Structures are given as C-alpha cells and as structure tokens.
Length: 67
Image (cartoon, rainbow, N blue to C red; front, side, top):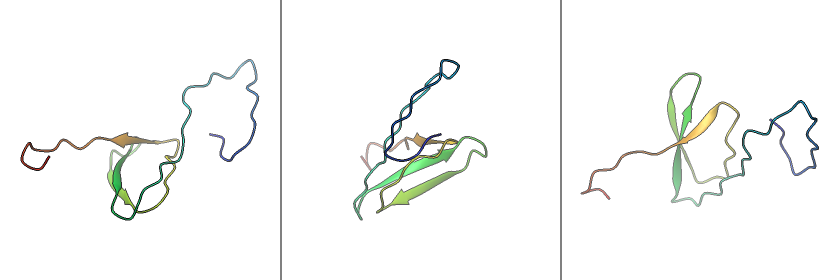
C-alpha cells in the first residue's frame, strides 16, 4: 500500500488492485469498518479516515423503522 499524495509508476510485475481515497467525516457522521483478518467491526466517527490494507467498508443492515 502506498500512502501520500505522490506519484507512483507501477513496475510491469505489479498489478493495481484498488485505488482508495480518504473518507472525510463530520462530527455527526460515521462509517463501519471491517477488519478482514480478524472479522471485527469498528465504527469511525468525526474524523477523516483512510482504510488500511486489511480493512473494508461494511454496510450495516437497518430495519425499515430505523431507516
């Protein structure tokens, strides 16, 4: 995983799997992040967050009443 604002020229042997951007969150906003190694789910709130290499966004299923 390459962090920064920077230029990175891929060598021929490397395949780009995914491009990720930071997620800006207001103090009243949040996301759920799932660790793919351990399976744990954490909530992140009120900060700009960049997913790590072993994390993915997790969508929580909401009831119709809550939604």
